[in-house]
Image (cartoon, rainbow, N blue to C red; front, side, top):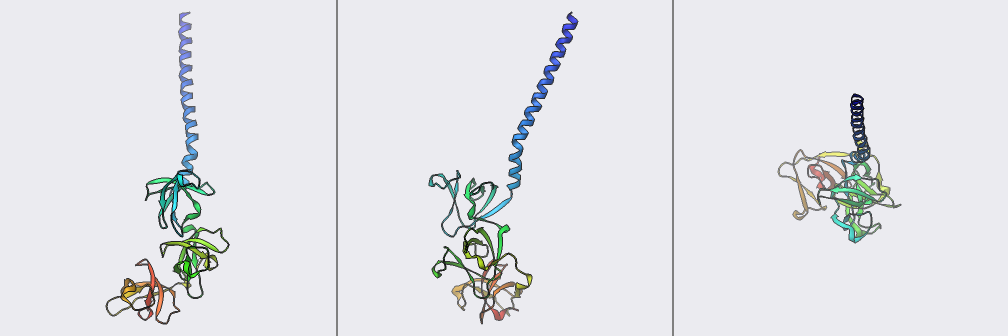
Length: 253
């Protein structure tokens, strides 16, 4: 009897060990199932960088998905970048701001990136970047020329879209009718600077004046011509300087 009891006891202990082992395995599997969706979502969103785009003021970083002064935890301005970690919301996305070293919610209509890039196309003159959705000279905050790139933040309006202009480092509204998805390589005209000595001034106005110089270009530097309608001064973009402005066309070849 004692031998049978001992065998039975061993079987019970063995069964208990097996049950405990299976329980631990089950607990681990449940934990993995709960964590897995979050891991997949984070890895999908990680690395998605967007640029804050506002025509005026700032974009509030919030601790809740609601427009309320009380939930503001930071201020983001045009040109600031954020990392989107959750884009499942229809209005508010969860982002991380390295500038503020904080995470929170922002209105997605004020975010733009290169995936929504368009090219400016005008027959002559420029496309105005505006601080309001209206055709007024008083609301112009920048000039965009054929070939300039913009990133769309909000395309909900029938006429004016909110865009970020990397060349200007500004956000604002533009008439969508002057934006195209692609531009052919032949439409981009590249010229090389050639001066006998000194430099060719990049200017913010069509005039020879020391006060309007915004950069210096030297022989061998290249520029992209955006507007060649002027008799003396052409509007160009310098990738070296990261700026657009006017130069005397007689020093381009």
